Length: 218
Image (cartoon, rainbow, N blue to C red; front, side, top):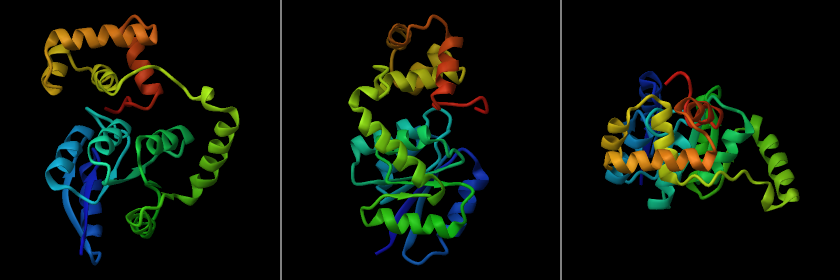
């Protein structure tokens, strides 16, 4: 029985390259591609893939929040992050969001296949270059206890609105994308500012970039 795989990346050439390579593998079927986090959620709902290979930095909805929403709604779907980021915070955020694998884009395709085979059995796969760092960080966090975890109080919806704000979307555009009223989005923005103790969209944008929700490239 073939593994059904979906691919999410905001660069078309990467999606196309992954599809071509994956479809050459026996027992693998690519069921679709998406260019941002919101599209991959809809694709997963429609196609029910076994595995999603997903970039982290994507417009409209980043990979961390997309992974969290996918796992909440469809917990059987396995997620592999494929990213340029080797920073431990990105890795930790993806694992906390429910990802089963984390592969660096600099790797050879054979490593991605190894990751696919590993997560399909229910195990975790981390690129060797970051595995040691992540384990050391995890042990350090555990030794400090739960109070050491960073807490902002932002809900999943808060994070969605914050990313869209940081990417320059107007309130009306955000309302359309999230199927909400303008008043609701305005209330979301006020609540986010209160929670973060910030008073301008510029401050929110800097925060979103610093936290890896979006980037200056978007």
